[in-house]
Image (cartoon, one colour):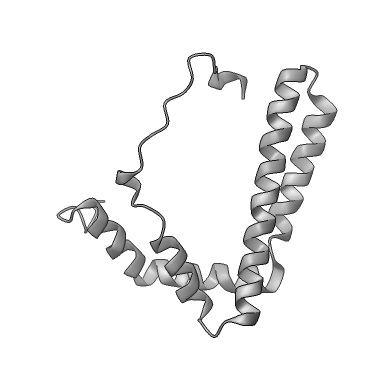
Amino acid sequence: MADTHDHLAPAERWDALLRDPALRQLLADAAADLLANGLTEELGSLRLSLLQVMTNETESDRLVSQVTRLVTATAQALRVQRTVLQHATESGEPMTAFLARLLGEVPAPETVPLATPSASHDPTED
């Protein structure tokens, strides 16, 4: 299926995507779920992953790396939850508009340089 925005520059495609009614509905649904349930399921998954890593990983370097990633992801999820819920209680801005505004601050995917893997990192070990 061809992208209907192929003729646009990357930044214009990103803007068009953010105005797309299907994405707006997805944002509205996500916002309603977040307001109703927070990130309970996501945080629970992170906790289970952390428990699994701490129980099963025997190599200390990998244990430290994986625990660090999971703790960072958990902290980020908690910050997102706190920010969104605080916004919902303190602002008159509709949640869909708030999420769209946040996404609008994210650079268009084509403008973000791809990270190059470190020569010492073996992705098969993740």
